[in-house]
Amino acid sequence: MRGVSMFNNSLEGRVPDLGNLKNLIALYLDTNKFSGQIPKSFGGMTGMIDLRLRKNDFSGTIPSELGKLKQLETLYLDTNPRIKGNIPSELGGLMKLSELHLYQMKETKNLGMQSE
Image 1: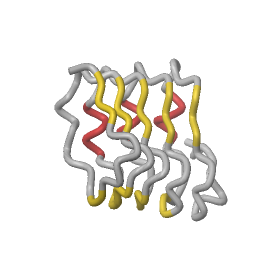
Image 2: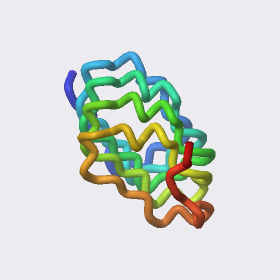
Image 3: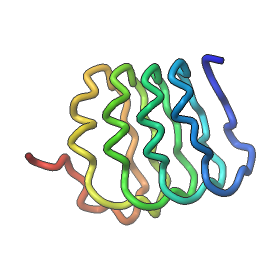
């Protein structure tokens, strides 16, 4: 399996652990009702190119483990109003990242890359 799309299905609850899907290149979980924290195990999906988690109800902070996704080109986290905190500095090492969407995250007014 190379891609999973569960876009716009009114799915609820926590996202299951998918970190063992190392060859997955695209995961679309956007426009659902997922809640809880973004799983740290997502950092294990090292082949990921396109990760879309927008328009859900995730909470907590952006996991620094996403910085392990060295092939990542697209990351949509926008419209998750309960995500808060700084952008993990590890995301600064994602050299292939060309799209990063973080808007409409109401509790993240002071988002910025953490300085070392």
